Amino acid sequence: MAGVTASTAAETRPRMRDCREAVRELRASERTARGLHRLDRRLHAFWAKLPVRPLRLLATSALIVGAGYLALSRRETVGHSLAELGGASPGYVVIAVAAELASLTCYAALVGLLLRLGVVSVPFRALVSLTVIGIAMLNSLPGGQALSTIYWYQQLRRYRVQRSVAAFALFASTLIGIVTLVLLTAGGLAFGGGAGFAAGARVPVVAVAVVILLVAIVGRRRLIPAALGLVRRLGGPEAVPDGPARADHLLAMLALGFLNWLFDLAVLLLALAALGERLPLRGVVVAYALGQLVAAIPILPGGGGTVEATTAAGLVVTGGATTTVVTAVLLYRVIGAWGLVPLGWALWLTIPTAPRAQLEPVSA
Image 1: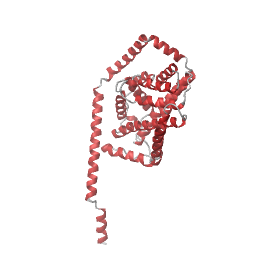
Image 2: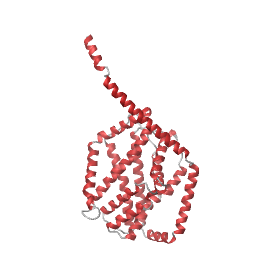
Image 3: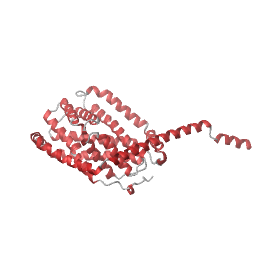
C-alpha cells in the first residue's frame, strides 16, 4: 500500500521540465501584459493632451468655412453636379440610404459580437454612434484611420472593456473586413460574367476565397476558442472569464462582415441605377474593391479624391458613360462617406462619456 502511495505521489509531483515551461509561459504573458499596459497609458496620455473642446469648436468652424468656400469658389461645378444629381431617381436614392444604414448596422453588430466573446456588452446605440464618428474622422482628418482606431479604443475603455478585449475586437474587425472584401470580390468575379474587365483576376481571387471558406468551415470549432485563449493570456491580471464561444460564432462574424460590404456595394449599384446606368456586375464589384483598397491607404482624408477617381475609372473601363459614372460615384460617396461627416462630428460634439454603470456582463 505504501508503495502504491509513493508511486502515486511521484506521478502527481510536478516535473522540473514542466515547471520551467510554466515559468517561461508566465514570463511571456507578463511581458505581453506590460506591453499592453504601456500602450494603454500612452494612448490615454496622448488623448488627455488633446484640447478636446477647442478642437470641437475648430472642427465645427472648419466644416462651415470649408463648405462656404467650396460653394462660393466652385459655384459652376457645384451647380452642374447638383443639376446632374437632381436627375437621380428619388426612389433609388432612398433605398441607397437605407442600404448604407444597414451597412453601418452590420459593422456595429460585428464589433458587438466580438466584444461579447470577451464577456462584455456595450450598448448597441453607442456602437452605431462610434461607427459613424469613426467614418467622419476617416474622411475628414489626415491620418484619420489611426485617429479613428484610437478614438474607438478610448471609448471602449470608458465602458470598462478590458485592454486585451478592446484591442482584440478592433484588430479582429479589421481582419474580418479584409477577408470578407476578398470574398465579395471573388463572388463578383465568379458570378458576374465570363469575360470583360478584370477577367484575368478571376482564378487567383476565387482560389483565395475558396481557401478562406475552407479554413472557416474546417477550423470554426478551434479558431474562436484559440483566439479567446490568446486574449485571456494577454489580459494578465484583468483576464476575461470564460464565456460562451460556439462554433457558429466565426461564421456569424464572416456573415456580418460580408453583409457590411454587400450593403455598401448596393449603395453604388443603386446610385448607378438612379442615374439610369446599367453596367456588368463584375466590373462594378472590381471597381468597388479597388476603391476600397485605395481608401485603406492612409495618405489623404477619405482618400482625398483618389477613391472617387479610382472607382470612376474602373466603371468607365467597364463601359460606363464618363459623365454619368462620375455623378453616380459622387452620389455614392455622398451617401456612404461625405454625407456622414457632419453627422459624425455632430455625434462627437454631443456624445456623452460612457457611464461605467452601463457595463453589462453577458449572462451565460
